[in-house]
Length: 434
Image 1 (cartoon, rainbow, N blue to C red):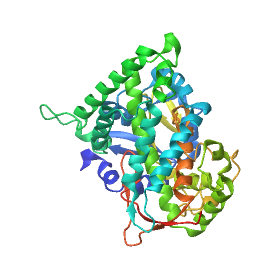
Image 2: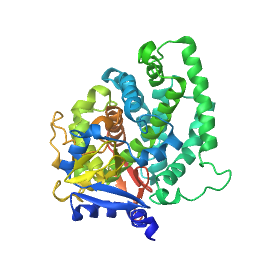
Image 3: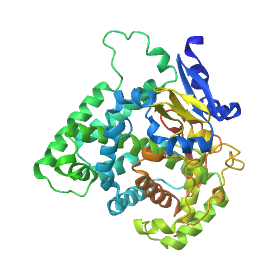
């Protein structure tokens, strides 16, 4: 299939393909359909790409493809639009706002964990997805129980992954040159249209009274002042972006964390010791997050082994040299956080889950150019601190009073899509003494 280039190999086993690229040099060239793509395999060059030469690049073809199912929010926005939106939205994710949301994160995680009957095997993948959606709705909207909103969100989420898989398929660059069938529409076009209509209704009600309701939507509408305020359409696009990141990324990361914890009794005992000491039997709270250093350590290693953002892309906007390779304007560049996280030159025994490879000190952070679970540089996920807080509180809620055990007869596979997620998570919970 010469017209498809390397796309069939990438489609067949994407994670193996991106790992193997480092054997061919710091910068390699592959073809996705007829398009040449340069793959950056060196941590030092990734740092150069994201920092020293960041102005020479913008988002690439992957993000162009996502603009249809996601709109023009932070994930897909480029240039000045991205910078303006990021600056306008930043206050919504400040420390004091996350502290408000943390109570919801803890309460809903505890309620989800409490519904799990001890001794009964349960697939946690759908449970965790419902949990993260519930938390997101309660932090985004003052009235998360709005039935029309919930129906519209669930309807869109039910088809969005299919639409995004089509957009991001390695064969997309080749297939997009073929004529579309008359009347073809993305599979999420109808559900997305209904969700946007509901969001516009809610935005209109918020604008009518102009008050801060203590939720994320209020911050999006009030931020920026009269001159830089987001329009209704821009707010809608950002809400779509938050629905994607707040469900797919966080739910996959939480599922992988519970998977790794359940398979390692020693790690689980250390977590229990920390939670017994810090929480002393009470619910986890925002103020506990800095003290839960072992929990953060386990999550840091989980995100190394299973980074949600496994493949990222840039496009040269001017002539630039990267690793001795001259790139013309328009040249597409891939780099893989997954491949970097599994590189034995960067991490000793990279396939081994080893939380102790990370220091316990909260002030010590992993190197930005070789540890990229939430992206890096100017494209670093704006909700990273929100996600860390939710993950730490959720892990604490699920494990403080339970010992997790995997169902040995049921293997767990990695599904490669917009994020890396487990296909299932069959676990049994055993009660721990109060």
